[in-house]
Image (cartoon, rainbow, N blue to C red; front, side):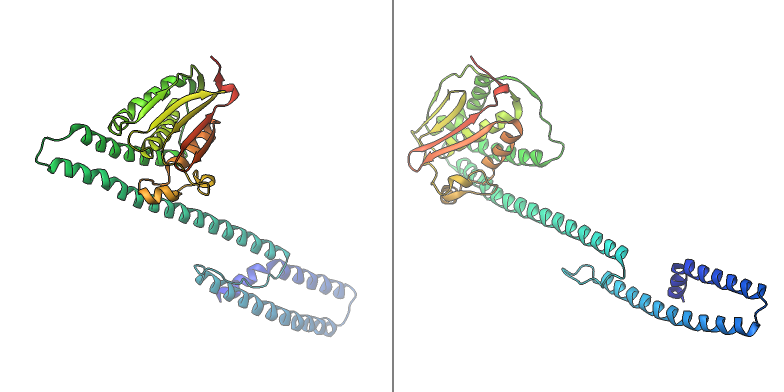
Length: 329
């Protein structure tokens, strides 16, 4: 009965229109003094035909209703077929529903990919941070006096990994803000060098820094983060006794090392999130996130980031600052 009432409410305009027509014909027949039998016979015929159309329409309406109810119950299925539209307007509604469903699937897929990438990164991060923690335990368990320099180096690695996670979360946040201002490039480089000085000294790496005397317009915090990641990779993949050189050429800041280098087939993918390459898999030192974050930061700051490398010869990372953000000597 509820469904019948719904159908009557849906067709009330048509019912009112037919009753109006019947009233008009009755008035016309009455004014012309036509026999009542003629009026009654015509009315009965109209009611029979109208009832047939009403029943057919109601049964189609009920069947359509049941089909939609079945779709509603199976809405969580990956795919289902919608019933044929009964008109142009219903076809428009179905197209709208399909568009909304496709957009929801796209958002779900993006969220799932993001969740999977985050889980993969955190898994690698946990395995990485366990290494310096284990090294600190070994240093503390030795009977001899504790090597404070080595202990400090392992503690620095833990701090670096924690800072990486925080930067990863901040960069993916919609509330990430950038405060642009004039910064001395040499001051930023020296700040990063001081940060990694302990590791540089422990590995006995020769560091050559040629002052650039350049001033750039950038965000100090994120530029230090980017320079720190590049310098960290240089220290990480440069063997003991190697060399790192920082200088400027034609307005570009170059950070070069004499490390193990990068294979040619890995170079095009070094900025992809989660890509560790041959060296990262062999050394078990890479999370595959550092250079990816650097690329995101460089794109937002308008800095062109490029990597050139030869296996066994070393790697050079170049930063080209935008013309409006660069002031020559």
